[in-house]
Length: 121
Image (cartoon, rainbow, N blue to C red; front, side, top):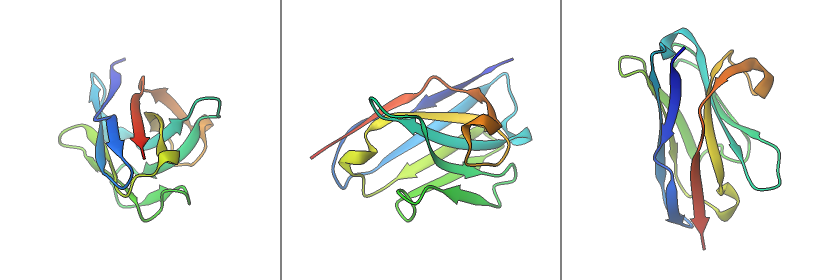
């Protein structure tokens, strides 16, 4: 079935930037929409961003709009999440997922294991 593997997380100061990557092995990303979600300790997993198969359309949570950018390179079988102007409330484990273009977790059927992002003040 293949797998999705996130990378690029780490510790960054408030106002800093990180770029997350989600690479697929044994699976063709171009066949599905992709999404990024995040889960902070003690909270539900929440939608962050989504992108259509072609990359033409994107969706963002209000909390990250204007700061985060989702993109994909189907030739490299990789999806990215560029995160700028990071805030402490962005601290979470970030997950990529493939499925149907949506803000809802239930529309994504394949998930990576996540990468930790910690924003310190």
